[in-house]
Image (tube, rainbow, N blue to C red):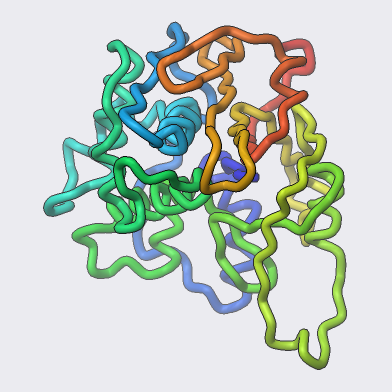
Length: 304
């Protein structure tokens, strides 16, 4: 499950006071001012194009579609602000994503093979895992945001557009953009298990195991993360589902990936390589989800 935070001002309210109190210095400078991050779509438009699959790149296409319809990221990339001041030499994931989002929302199906450059283990013609590709893509985008800045301490890194959108602070003093949860019957059950106090001892004292469950579970359209915070933040933390990535097949390294996204017009669409079809909310919520993407935003219960 991937959670998109709100603006850095909310990030500071929810996370920074506690972190700074424990010895983490305030950022020396702000990479991107909070006013430039918009959680809601700035413009309503038709759904973008499907993506051509030259061979076993469905995992790339599904991830790219989910990122393309992440409102705060898409708003920023559509402004072309990054490329206008980019300091990255050679391959720049942010510049490539910026060009991709602008192209896919205005043109027909396009090739996506250039994205395979972000990892040596992603090769054209070889199947890959959507979770691994998403992790590499977000990491590469964050690295591009800090390129050329030698004074980028951890607090300053937390003010990049990518960190503000995708990363959160965990009270155990670990900072992780992705945290696989143990097997559970629902998203809320998984969250309750994640924050439940645990006694460590013996062989379990210094062990950290990441468990990825092949089981599928139910998931809601809306999430309230308030009950799972370590302290009251002063504002409700409401999240709304905006993308569901689905996998069909025996394992993550075979089969097929596609996704469902919520476009800026408020409608849901199934994105399956070059195929783009409108669908209902009931269909979206009945999928065997591989990845769920939620965005922090004010919730209007009367709107799907």
